[in-house]
Length: 162
Image (cartoon, rainbow, N blue to C red):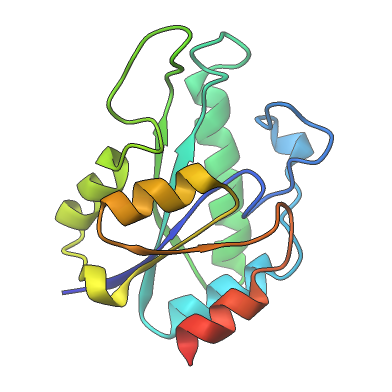
């Protein structure tokens, strides 16, 4: 079995300061410490998996291709620094447009990743910046750490690796 770190995207990996929806590659700004701390986790055998709500797609603010390009750019930066996001799972829905089963705080996307990558829940964690991140991970049986929005995740990574 594998161990994994599930990561929220906006506010956890990349800054969402000044943006209602972050989707343009030109607006991509990784939060302080993201590269170094993801590399530490990766080097310690954790699979890195993003779990994100992307309601702007349902609201026609941007398209799925914008999200895929944004994710590709995040991973390109990380690959240049010696680590890799195994997969980006995201919900393109919003309750105001149509109901779904994949939007956090529901755990479906985390559960899909657990099954696909043979994840040991007892050795895996979620790092996010909101209550819904914690609710989704805990519903899937994964311990959650919540950080301040757009903050450095170093303290949480130190705890995970200790």
